[in-house]
Structure formats: C-alpha cells, structure tokens
Length: 447
Image 1 (cartoon, rainbow, N blue to C red):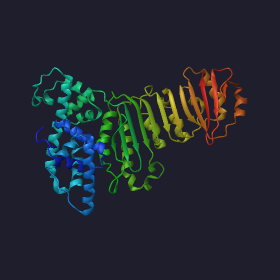
Image 2: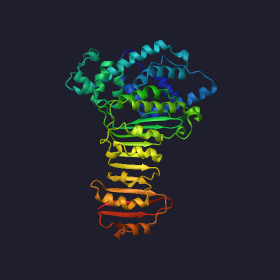
Image 3: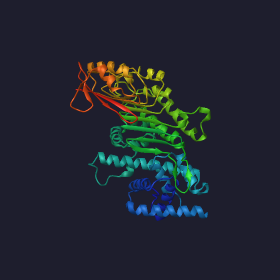
Image 4: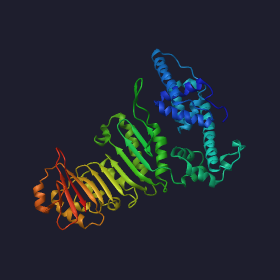
C-alpha cells in the first residue's frame, strides 16, 4: 500500500490517542491495531506491550487536558486508515478526527482523498488475501498490483463473499454498485440479530457480537456518545441484511424499554430524541421490507403494545418456531396478535406479562410458558392438551391464590410417586403444583 502509515512510535501514539477520544477500550483499540498491521503486512506488538502504551498515553492525555497543553500530531494517516478498517463513513471519520485533534489539524479535502484512497486499497487487499486462500496453487511470484476488482471473475468474487465475515460482507457492499449486486445475491453471514434501545443508548449485536454500542462511557468526564452513526451506517447495514431474502436467522430480538413507551410523546426529554427517531426509523424500515424475515425465534420486549403485531408480522409464518413476548399488552391488542399466522404456526411460546388469555389460544403449541390462565379454564386446557398430538409440556405462573383442593376436586387427579405431582384421569398428562412466596406455578407434561 502506498504511503503506508504505522512506521513510527508517533503513529502508534496518534492511533491510541484517537481511540481514547472515541472511548474505545484497550481490547477494541488493539483489535483495530492488529488489523492495521495485517493490512500493512507489519509485525504487531503483543497485547501486553500495547496495553502498557495505551495506559501511558491515556494518562498523558488526561493530564494534558487538565493542564491545557496542546497535543502535537502527525499527518493522521494511521487514524484515517483505522477508520476505513473499522467500517466508518468518511463524514464520521472527519468529524471525530476534528473533535479529537482540532479542526486546524487536517484539511477536509485532503482527508476525503486519503480516505477514498485507503478505502479502495484496504478492500482490494482483503480481496487479494481471500483470493489467495481460495486459490492455493498461485505461485510465490503472484503480483498483487496486477489484480483489481475489475479483472476478478464473478465466480471468484462470489466465493470470496461466501468466505467473508459479517463486517467484511457489509463493507464490500459499499465498494461499487456492481459488487453490491453480487454481494446481495449471497446469503449474509449472520444468524442472530439483537437490537436494544434505551433512553440514553442504542446497541446493535449480530452473531452475538456488538457491532455498535452508543452507551455513555465515563472516562475523564461524562459524555453521551453520538447516535449519528446509528441512524446512518447501522440502519443502512441492518436494512441490507433484513431485505436480503436469503438471510436465515436463528434468532431475532428487539428490546426497547425507554421512557417514551410510558410517557406522552410531547413530554419526552430531549435525551430521548435520537432514540425515538431510531425507534420509528426501525419500524418504517420493517414496513418497507419486500419479503418476510426468515427467523426460527423472535423475541419482542417492551415495544409499544400497538407495535408488537406490526413487528411480528414481518416474520415468515411457519419458519418462526419460537415466539417470546415480554410485554403486558391490552387484551384488545393480544386478541389481534393471537389471530396472526405467526402465532398460530409457532411451536414454542414464552409469554411474559400477566395476560389472561383463553385456553384455546395455547393448545397448538408444543411447549409454552405463560402467566395467568384462568383457573376456570384449567380443566378445559387439560382436556385439549391431552388430545393434542403436538403438546409436550407447559409452565403456568399466577400471582393469584392457588386453591389446590379446588383444582383437585375439578380434575380428580391421582397422586404419583413424585411429591406434589398427580396423574389426570382419562388423559396422558401429569400435573404438578409449586407454591411460592409471590408466584405460584403449575407444570403440566405429557407422559
């Protein structure tokens, strides 16, 4: 790569100082540093050594800020390349460099030119390395500079895309329109998506690893990290994944528990403005999907009750096997939810929130874990579950007084060898009772 940075201790210092201003941990900073060394084909120092320099420059930065001293910087090439490797946009890179080192330290036009240059070379380097791993018969004299995107066969690029991790997959999409077309025809390397929205932060996880976390971090002072990256880059990447009809998820989880769900829109504090904007943009993005999301499990927690059905209907019925709802919806809203195909064709259910639904809404599930089924419905539930070919077991929780003698009189069960466990006559079911301090439980299983 031309004009390769990271050739001097000053470059390492610039990189660490820049990461400190972005509130990155030592581990995250070292991860970017290792990727830099790999792209530049340089030997990386050990994590222990890097941690020493990180802590040293952290202290220097702290005392410099308190004493009003100005930090002298180089040309910041290493920081620009780090942003390229980290998948950040040109605008975000320039903005954060100015925040970290001052507007007078870098010219916008120079920054954009270098960013575009490094972006192309970094992506080309990743293609070359992936191509080498695909074609192990290449001779040692293989010339990197003769290989560009334009002369790679499409089947080779396709195989490279299939070997990419999620971050590389998403980065390749923004190289060119033609490459984006090829990438979008391949299944995304993503099996789990987890979105968490709170009053003061948004977190996006994919494949159980954090992609973006805007959680406020306290270092030398308290600051809320910008949500601009979420609305621009992350929403774009999330949309690219969910709109791909070949996406196959094992799980999808949306957890929104901010005060906007309990407060009138006009009275929400300013700190929630970006969060509220992201929440609504997310819903609009779901509405724009041309195909249903393939996911085996869907968890929706604390969304506005009027939006639970809206989110649920974006998933392909039948493919969705496990459903978990963590919210106390109004009965009118639950009556709409139980009529959806997603509910009717799911096999496993966890329903948190004290919602008294009719027993008929649960008999098609193999397993279910619910709160509050009317004791008057318990006999009818057992009769239906005994006849169901799908049913395996269920847990029922209730805060009501559990009148075991009344239940025994209604069901006339026979005691089993296990304490508190009974056989239900004329059925293949066993029922068990558990009395707690605040919550009572009923467990039913098929023999």
